[in-house]
Length: 337
Image (tube, rainbow, N blue to C red; front, side):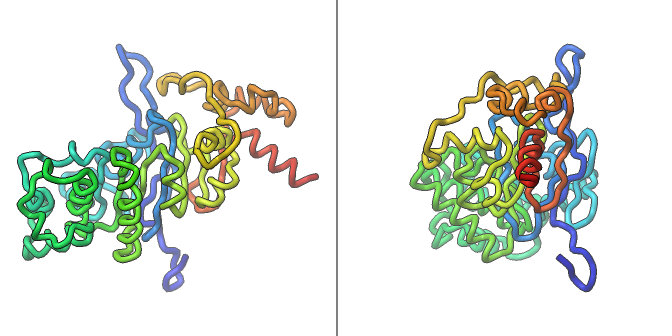
């Protein structure tokens, strides 16, 4: 993508991002995020998927400057993120977090009006506060907005509370939303409404979004691209069609196999993910890999590499990529037959 002959940078980018937490009792640090390369372009929705504990939420918070990386760099609109109070304050007007639990995100003592106006007050908004709050509520689908001004969170449904949280993000007119499991706590009947709202906000406002989820069905319904995360690394990435209709990594295949619409027998992963303070040699998935367990990796001659050689860190580009020795060997084998 070019503009006036120049390459347009992604809206948000991560390069070599690592977040490590101190180990217990002086032990090795836990690498919750372990070398991530990721781009999000203006107006694009990227789904970050994986099991609980794989590092998704830590990565999301690092991208927002809520967690400072141990190594690597985050950039927004081509400018490196700096961690001074002033720079972070400016950045958080442009990139907003939407949390999973709207009940926990809202102060039960604050009215809807005050909840949405809070960001304006923190950032010293100089315009008409009432107009800004009403516009944000309206964009979030709470109409007429004045009807909700004096309500308290306990007087709202779960879907309405989540819309208030989204309105609180929208009131600052951000360019990026980071939504961490935005519909996980909602009834199935309401989830579709919130996902449709996020798509409408992208269409109407040009908003980009990173949607953190363990639900690949949600990713299919909302995302342009998917990044699959396992033990601190992105192990497969590409367009939603590439990743969810033709998954290459055995981990992605296992996650998809449990969806009701998948058909066939679900792939049950054995054991728990390794401790991020003791990441194994080789592919970090190899101890749980059903392909390796079934002998398929032996057939393609990569079993030793699976156990001893790191398949590497995926680049940030939009093309389909996979960090898996077996998948790469299978593609190469297919290309030569």
